[in-house]
Image 1 (tube, rainbow, N blue to C red):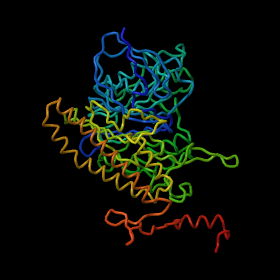
Image 2: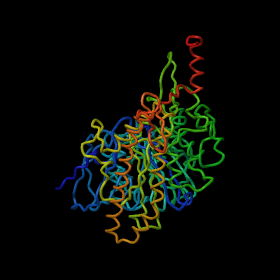
Image 3: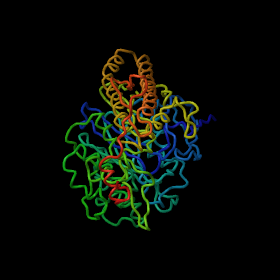
Length: 544
């Protein structure tokens, strides 16, 4: 019997628990009719990349070994599908896209006997599903057959026509309590709405009679009853109230990120500030989805993935945590203690530990090789451009899948490491260096969007084989160009801002004196805000 080994290293990345963000846009809520979804895989130091799984045929009876996506621990074997589809990153050749965020929930529900973890479930399903509905069927049948060994998970499941949100938890290892190995519910997001989730279970009550737009496990209510977690009528059942009730952290650290997305593009979100703040137990619950006040583009969703709560009560520029140069990032862990009291850092969408970020664009009116454009960034989305990756690509670009590069081996040929090199220069001197990075980032982003129509129009004139070859080459070309530009940016930043000074420029060139030396540097010193804080803390100690 042939056995197929799929190591977790062949998957896109390892995403850290309690650390991811997904946004979703229905096709009638987007500018051009695309279904759009996004995912920031925030992994706390682990190496990330973009991996390709080619389409394949497998002899009947082929077994597939499953390794945990987070730990690489061997879980067991499952029966391989006889046909699997092309997958690049988190999108397959049918434009099906799947993302996730971990919400945890009741620890006692984890099935330690299960074979399939959440990450393996995503990539196995992408290799087998042609539609979002089929993906839901595959995911739920796989975990029922082989067991689900992860904590509570929220999945984004989209195709060119529909967007779904699904939440899933295991039923522990004791089959005597209730038949069924998982409790799950999936809701179709209305086409004219936007949705989001960020490490907090968001599904509350759902219409069990709406068979077209609502799907759920047969035991989703009865399991909670038998465990003593729910006693009301079926129609009053709330998924997260039973299995993952929002606490302070679930609201302030997690739901606040969703609130920031809604607040950016929907009216009336001030009423849910008390919910996002997390203190008021009686605050009005934020809805699962809202109607945007305008139709969103891919660019709009990219902007949302770069959010730091700007111009909101949660903005990170109102205290000294950002340092001299007002960095809108905070160190991890999120919680810290002073004199026995516990405090927390705000947790925005854009975060330094992001391993990769994507915005997936799925379009039903185009041939599927063209319709699925997977905009990929191999670091914190705020600090890098999103390059186009077409769903038909038969090879991952070398900068995103670099031989020899991993979490312990730096490579100048690898996008993750070069982009992290630049980001980590910028973070501590953010207000000084970030404008230079942003200029290059936006220039590249805009060039990709300007070229998109021309590239896709050309692809439309080609037969399927030539189209796939062309778009695979274009995907690689843009990644290589981005990497080259980022290498140049890295050396520019070192020269421009060396030793906390600023070298002057003219017409894009560093200026020199008439004797050929570098011109006198500028020394910006403290901002007025920071200088005042120093005086406030030190009094007359440094007074001249």
